Image 1: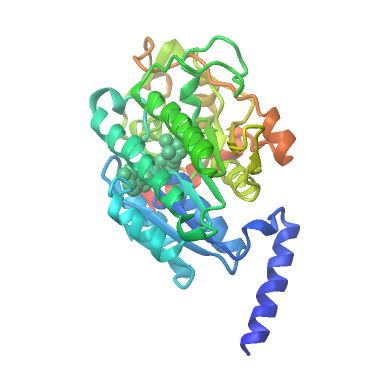
Image 2 (image 1 turned 135 degrees about the vertical axis):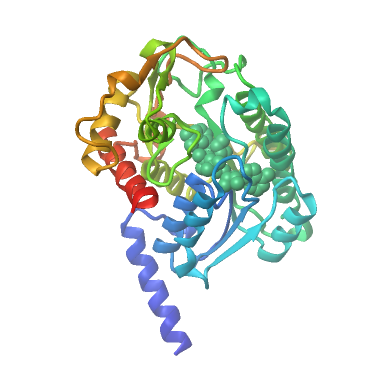
Length: 375
Ligand SMILES: NC(=O)c1ccc[n+]([C@@H]2O[C@H](COP(=O)([O-])OP(=O)(O)OC[C@H]3O[C@@H](n4cnc5c(N)ncnc54)[C@H](O)[C@@H]3O)[C@@H](O)[C@H]2O)c1
């Protein structure tokens, strides 16, 4: 019976490969931090649905930066996978907890998505960013480093979330990972750039294969309430005015969450190669990619499509007076006028580029919002 089930799992895994799943992530222990978060929960779902022999360990401190009910709801969606999904409530800033998790589960792949997100919040609450994004990330790096102790195979790939925010107010678009990103305009951006630098040093010193992913404005069902599309919806429903910054002339490369998850899955499976340099020391197995839609949308067009989809889903009535609920205001500190991803490196190395049209993604968001808040 046991043999039969292993053969079945093996055949199932082969079928999964046909769906672009690289065999190198089959049969692994994967640690996903920020597992109750927007991107983390979607990634866990994909991993559990498609890799039947993978153990997914999710870590999240379930902090109250935004409505914890949404984090709980996301975790509930994963309860069907109890045998292969272990959830641990705790912080990556807790070094002893992180070390304990690495000792117990010995993850071969680590996807660090836990972070204090949000640009504006970093202006009023810098402590949260230092704790999660710097101390927490340092703990993950240290745990990866010690995963090789006593000749163990250890972590094969550390994938971590960076952000398009690292581009600051760079004028040159589209943003390329070859561009200079030394002028962050928020502490959030500074912590994300620091993560890339820290990962580089650890890759060089301890030969840890690591890939940083600069995500561009991710949206979708059960997304983050602090983000504009979600906040706009809440406000319009309450009959409040929405503020459109930079008088509406901002452009954002909105990226649908399934595209982000697809990108992460592909990247996870292909760690940068370990090589030895002429000096006999490791050439850092280190990469950074953009994952964005490569198609920036004007904020006013975005709001128009959102409105149409909110009406279509029945969140707002067909005769809603949008003009009366719109206010065009100047730029906010920490904001940037445009984000636009150059995805050529992602396409070259992984044969993939996000492609979900904005209307399709917002339609799914509006449908989820209706079910979650209004049914
Ligand atoms: N959503 C986007 O548009 C976007 C864009 C660029 C980068 N990112 C990055 O992607 C990652 C995931 O973002 P998201 O949109 O899913 O955000 P999210 O806030 O929904 O998810 C992050 C999760 O991490 C958890 N967390 C925070 N600090 C923690 C800590 N110290 N220990 C354990 N858990 C902790 C939170 O409770 C949350 O559930 C983050 O690193 C974020 O900075 C997101």
